[in-house]
Length: 220
Image (cartoon, rainbow, N blue to C red; front, side):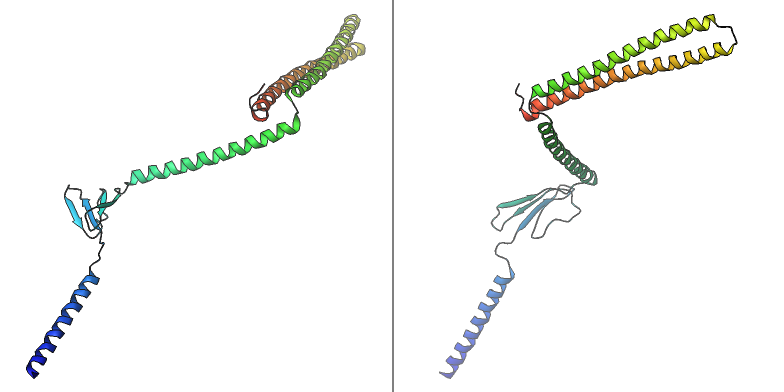
């Protein structure tokens, strides 16, 4: 009986040791370990429990322990591809900034037009007022030039009757030079007024177009 008991105890100890070893092995091997499939640069297919070497330039496929493909990792980009991707990102950022600035400028322009005008008719009324004002300035300048031309003709006749080289003749010549300068200034003034009127028309045309698009949403 003693021998049987000793044998049983020995057998039980061996059984416990075997169970413990099995449990330790089960803990050491992951139940859901990933399997990596990759193809090297020579076209050879590899399967492993670790990722492919970083030097490979091909895509990687990751499988689970049951053989189902879980993920595809694309091949790493080349230096040229990384540079192109960086350039595309920078361009996208610039485009986004430009879009945001355009949106802000549009909102600011709309607010400006709303403060300046109540309707399209108000824009045309302002145009008519500016046209009348500038037309009046041009007419007054033309009348002034006619007066200066008459005075110039009178002095010219006096110069023709004066003795050449006399102090009176020198005075007439100085007066003619002054009159010529004043006539030139009047003509330059009228050119400036016409340029101003052209700029006013251009600005009011722009205001009318933007007012219709931004404030009235394209309505007439």
